Length: 441
Image (cartoon, rainbow, N blue to C red; front, side, top):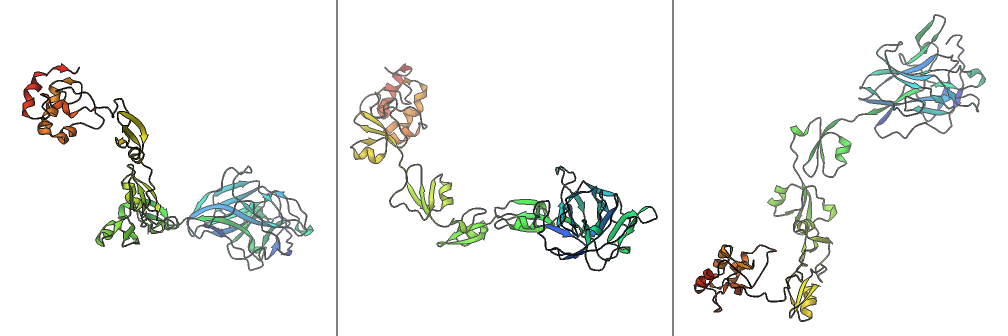
């Protein structure tokens, strides 16, 4: 700062606080040395020459990442335009007043008078975010390198300081004070701390998070874990080091107990609603459950789901039956009518074949022709009929019908009455053998 003339203007900062950035998230911390609050009172510092740097040595309060820097830039006389300066530097800060290695360089910061100017990108196009990792207690420098000489004496804009005492080892100047370009303790020239700041995104401690459904996740922050229903957080631990017990709603005596383990629910004769279930969702309020058969049951939603039913909601009822009824074939004589409910069919004097049946072919309303000996209904008599024929012995219709898998062709039980005496018994054996290896007419 060759030929430096310090001109101070005490400025009541009753201006709107504008920053060129996005709103800070809850975990971000503004790190500063200055005591300027809500623009309070500040002293404009000048005059700086091209290439000089003014900066603050700051200390991180946490493990985290520097994501932004702030510089208060004020003018003595209103009306000055924005100023494009050379750069903002971030250096390591183990020593004083000489910074260590450069950690980040923010190109061409545009300073607007009357505002806290905030910067979150390394490049002028604002495409590369500022991200500098730091640990708790680590010192670092943030400096502004000037491109335009300041003219504070004539009301021009510049950086500011507070009106408190200049803290030791906290403010630096890079310039030429007659002994060449060097770093200096700025407190030799100013009596307050520079309003140059950093914003650090502080990392929360992480640990294992046990969720109510019994699942576990590693490296979860406490706030993220506890934001989940019924979750418990274990700081510094991993899922391999803990046991997560599933918990959920327990339905008992018309009430609902919250976050109970399956074993504890069973021990009090309750009905466990499932891992991670919540009483606030009315899981223990019964309702109508529609089965595919059209039957209506009043049960809990999780019980209905286990039956592959359609739950109509807590508090719904089965009176009257709200469930859609299945359709099937309806026989009126030998005439087959498709897509009829049981009530529609029987109410019209028909005989309902059953749910999800159709009119074929074959027509279920027509009695299939008898083919003596064709016990398995494949329209031929062969060794394949033997097991079916044996099952039909002694007029055992149920045993014979049980031989058929769902969807297999059907025929008349009378096929087993090979001798035609109206009864299926041992007297049909010889006639059955006699027609072996023939086909039905």
